[in-house]
Image (tube, rainbow, N blue to C red; front, top):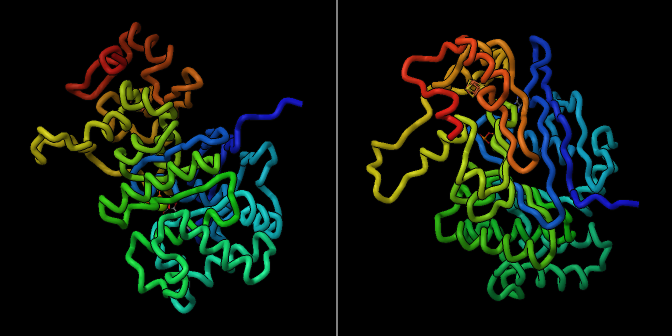
Length: 348
Ligand SMILES: Nc1ncnc2c1ncn2[C@@H]1O[C@H](COP(=O)(O)OP(=O)(O)OP(=O)(O)O)[C@@H](O)[C@H]1O
Ligand code: SF4
Ligand SMILES: [Mg+2]
């Protein structure tokens, strides 16, 4: 039997929420895969659905949310509709998650040694002494100095960077095949951030795990990613290997994100910003969700939503890269905003 090289495959995942007025769709046909030993970074503005994607994969959506359609295949097994008990076993053994703010995930009344050892004890069904030894080993692996003494510390006695290392140790205690990290370094200063990222890269190659990393920071993407998923308002707009994404970004939103990265020789006020705001889930446009902010928007963009197309290693969800755009251009039907470049220019 052929064994898939994918650790995770997310297929047309749709997530919706129930509120007083009815059901609101948030994620629309999110599609991607992560190979064994690969790092995928998810980027996009606040509220675009990055955290919900990871919570849906982990089976941790809030009570009023649900996967309406789609599949989450973990080693080819669909996790959607698994019972809470089964998901809890999978989270314990095969997947772990690191959240943004370690203080909210660590228990302030227990020592870090007790918390890491407890995670080991549950997942490995190890005895007390064995769990403490393994906790010390894990804390050493993530670079906590003198772990034999630090295990007696409480979370508030550690710096932010050290606490994040403890969170990583806990997440790795079960030897996960997939580590999901939601903005793991956003709250940390730049030097500590660099150390933590280096540590994650190092552990990835040592333990051969796959990583799904959520970040606002394209600098982090260039350090960590093999592949990148760019999301906008609950949809994937570009999906590419990291090199192509930076060298040849296609979607106008991705281009805007990359152009907004400060360059050393650029004055801060000259930074290009993507004007406008993300549409709210209750008022999602029928066509392209980026149309109100896009300088290339034409009729077709407002009428129909573009789906991802292109080569498997670089896909984009934008009408400009489809035959229908060229047909419209030939017929002179493309009515763009004043000053916008042509589709051809945008593709160059
Ligand atoms: N419990 C909930 N009930 C209703 N809507 C929700 C709920 N949780 C999240 N949402 C909505 O889902 C959308 C996506 O949220 P999500 O937390 O995934 O964004 P994000 O990309 O992680 O943003 P950030 O970068 O700020 O963390 C947002 O519009 C948010 O308002
Ligand atoms: S050109 Fe059209 S489809 Fe492409 S991003 Fe702009 S509005 Fe969306
Ligand atoms: Mg989030």
